[in-house]
Length: 327
Ligand SMILES: Nc1ncnc2c1ncn2[C@@H]1O[C@H](COP(=O)(O)OP(=O)(O)OP(=O)(O)O)[C@@H](O)[C@H]1O
Image (cartoon, rainbow, N blue to C red; front, side, top):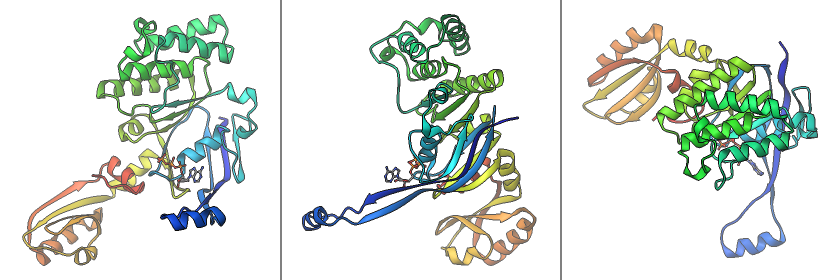
């Protein structure tokens, strides 16, 4: 297998200027501005094999977009190297640009007043796809997504799910070997989410395209990505199999407790990692082998009125690793 992406100590520092509030400070800023540096990506290294589907996750501001912008050649890194499909992305060679696609759930590349078929045809021309390949690819993709009848309908008349399907066809018409999917199911109803997911899985299996997927919907990641890369504070926080995350969490349980008088977070912290705390309610994460002993101590020591032990879900764990609240 060949590496589609090889990233070595990639780093991006953005210079920016401190903004003061208030009139006097603003005037002072005009004369002397304080220059600050934002370390958006802190020397990350990873490699992705051709044909892999990788979930690229992290909390807001973690550095995902900055990394993907460097890997698509939109941004120059401050230091470090990246080889993407044999190219250095920020050299922006035509041969490189021909081989990848970016699909953004939040931004459309389709002309709203034209039928989607026209925007797809425009991409055919931009990428110089020959007529035979174009017809074959359009036929295959529109059949897989079940939108053959809709190619002639003005984009603004399509539902959100149908629009996303057209977006995918437009992005894949030149058969890219690498696809960055940024929130491809955002805002879609459950049926459309499911059909987009099914399509992505089938497409990857049929064409062995390398896919990097970011999504806030953990179902997308669970269904499609055997491997996840978690970015946090500009650094690599976890790189491994989704199964690995699952194995780690199978080792832990969530003990939920209701009390009839308030119990402090500090008192509970001695028994496990406090995930939630609200006076009369608390949830503690406890290592599996200790659950029995810890539970009996908790029941002895505190005025517990209700008590449950639950498995931690992969979704909860991913969200926790990303520094967000499972709620
Ligand atoms: N041009 C810029 N100048 C200064 N700081 C920037 C610039 N672009 C991004 N940043 C900062 O770099 C950090 C990483 O941003 P980035 O957009 O890569 O995060 P992200 O993981 O994609 O977040 P999100 O999930 O919100 O899209 C943030 O703190 C952001 O404010």
